[in-house]
Image (cartoon, rainbow, N blue to C red; front, side, top):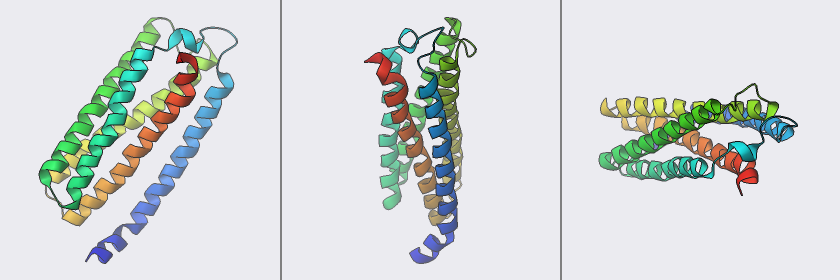
Length: 190
């Protein structure tokens, strides 16, 4: 039975990995753009804009969410509904806290006059970090759908495969965040 279900989802997994490769190329292009335009020759400098506290808090919330997702993954192995709920719920809450802090960060920068049109550095920053935030928001919506499907008691094999594909996505988003910390924030905060 396991071989049959694995075979049924091979094309979906391959398609999703190809999607992640395209996403990685897109993010690589945005990282390159950010590196080229930062720091800007005029206008705000990253060291004036970024705040260590916000970066640390957002990082704690988002990177912890990968750990809580592991709880749900473990629940899938022996179909522990409680572990799946706890893992997905905690991941959703941590991802939501990340989004609240990201929106606050953008609002604060914008209200201090660090707008998209100030210089190329800020434009590339908002596009790169904003695109990442939109991926987190999409992941939160996907989690809601997963939780809904879990309550509808889809066939176990189908739910497990959907959850696995979501895991790949969420961990990919976390890897991009680590790169954002290392390339965007760290050179100007430490």
